[in-house]
Image 1: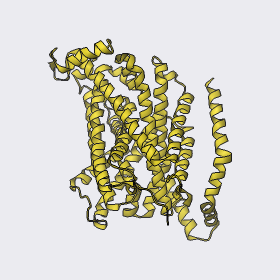
Image 2: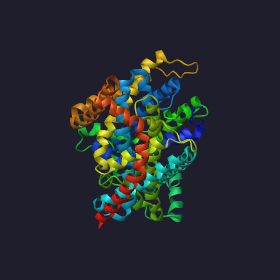
Image 3: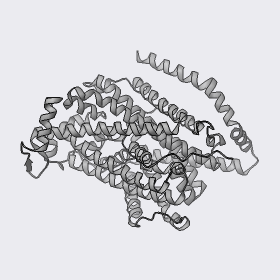
Image 4: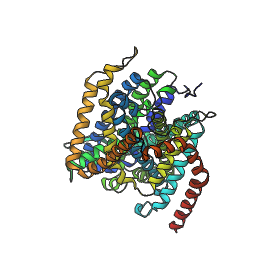
Length: 520
C-alpha cells in the first residue's frame, strides 16, 4: 500500500498559514521603498497598499477556484501543468523552486537578522555587520527546516503561534500610532487645509491617558505627514511601478492555501475560509500600521532604512520598545516555515510526476514528512544566501513572482472547460479578467521603466528552458546525457545521504567559523 499524506489540517490551520505567509517580512521592510516610490506622498503610498491588497485578494480567489477544481496538492505548478502541459510547467517549477522560493527564504532570513541587530545600531544602521546578519538569518532558517522535517502538525501549531506574534507586533504598533494621534489632538484626515480636531473627551484621548500613566510618557506625533497626504516630491513612473511591486511582495503568500489540498480534512471549506479571512486580516492591519508609521515618524525617518518598526518603537513605545525587534524577528523568520511548507510539497508533486529525481517524492514513513525535499530546499537557500543582499532581490523577485502568478491564474479560462467537479467554485468572470488586465499593465510598465529587471528575469527563464531541452534530449535519445541522467536519477538518494553525512555538515560548520572570524 503506497504511503499517502495524512488529512490533518483544518480551517484554523489554513487561515494561519495564509495570514502567516502574508504577514511576514513584507510589512516590516516595504514601507520605506513604497513611500520612496510614491514620491514621499503618504496618501499615494496608502493607495498603493490598498491597491496591492485588492490585487492580492482577486488573485487568491482565482487560485481558490483552481484548487477546488484540480483537487491536487502542489499549488500554482499543478494548475499550470493541468492547463498548459509539462513544458510550461517545468519552466514555472524551475522558477518557483530554484529562484523564487530561495529568494523569499533569504530575504525573510536577512530581515530577521536585520531586526535583531538594529537596536544595537539605532544611530548608524549601516554599521551593522552583514556577516552577523547572515549568520542570524541562517540560524533561523535551519531551525524551521528541522521542525518541518520532524512534524507537520507541530509546524502547523508553531505557525499559528508565529501568526499570533506577527499580529501582536502590528497591533502594538497600530495602538501606539492611534495614541500618538490622540496626543496630537489632530485626526489623520487633513486635506486641502481642512482638519478635524479631536475633543479631549474622545476615546482615543482616554486611551492615551491610560497608556501614558501605565507605560510611557514620550509618545509624540508627527502629523505633518498627514496634513497634505498627496503632496509629492521626485515622483517618477518607474518609482511608482517599483512601489507597486514591493507592495505585491508584502501581500505575497495567498497561494499557500493551494499547496496542501490533499492534507485538508474538509478541503473546500478550508480553501474558501482560509483565502477570504486570511487576506482580510493582513489588509486591515497593513493600512493601520502604515498610518501609525506616518503619524509617529517623519518621512526622513521612514526613508532612512528598512527596519522602520524599530525606529517607531524607539521613538514612542518606552520600555515596550524591546518587544518589537523580537516579535518582528519571529515574524520574518516564520516566513521560512511557510515557504518550506509550500516548496517541499511542490517538489514532492513534481517528483511524483517524473520531473525531478524520485527521492524528492519520498515520505518519511515514521513522521509522514517530506524530509528529502525539505533538506534540498535548505541547501539551495544556503548557497544563495552567500552572495545575495536583501534589497537587491526585491525587484527581480517581485516581477518574476507576479509573472508566475499571472500564468497560473490565466489557466482558469481553460480549466473551467476541462475540470468541472460537482462542488466546483465558479467566480464571476470579471474577477479573473480584472486580475489579468492589471497584471499585464504592470508587466508592460516594468518593461518600459525597469528594463534591467526584465533582462534579469528573462535570464532566469532562459535557464529553465535550457534545462527542459536537456531533459527532453535525455529522455528521447540513447545518448551520454541520457545515461548520465538515468544514473543520477536512480542513485541520487544514496549520494544525497552520503553528502549530508560526510560533506555538507562539515562544510557548513567550517563556513560559519570562517564567517565568525571575519566579524573580528
